[in-house]
Image 1 (cartoon, rainbow, N blue to C red):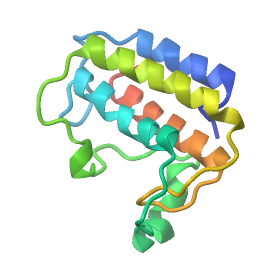
Image 2 (tube, helix red, strand yellow):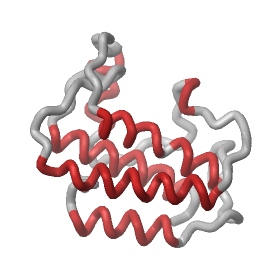
Image 3 (cartoon, helix red, strand yellow):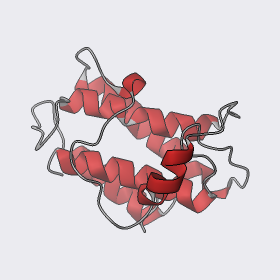
Image 4 (cartoon, rainbow, N blue to C red):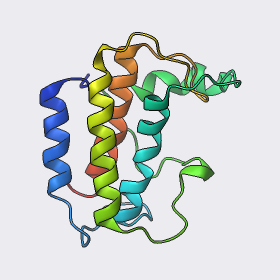
Length: 147
C-alpha cells in the first residue's frame, strides 16, 4: 500500500494535484474542485496535530471499516462524509490547493514520528497506517477529479 511518507508517492500526489485547475470537473459526487481541496485538508490536519481524543472511536467503524481505510482496495464512489467535512459554501481553488500542498508537505515530514494518538472515529492507527490512509484519501479524491 502506498503511503504519503514515501517520497516517490508524495511526489506523485503533488504531480497529480498540479494537473488540477479551477475548471476541473468531478466524475462523481457534489463537491467542486475547490471544495475537494478544502475537504482533503481535514484528515491531514487531524494527523499532524496529533491531539489526544477523549473519544474511544466508533466500534462498528473499527470492526467493519477500519481495514478498508488502509488496504489496496479502492474506496467506492459516493461514500458518506462526516458533516464537519462537507464544504457548504464555495471554496477558492487556488487558496485551498496551497493549504493542501503545505499540509501534505508537513505530513510527509512526520515520517519519523513514532508517537501517534488514536483517530477519533477509527481508533488506533500505526504510523504506517496513518501514512497509508492519508494517501488513500487523497488518491480517492484526485481520482474523483480525473487525475
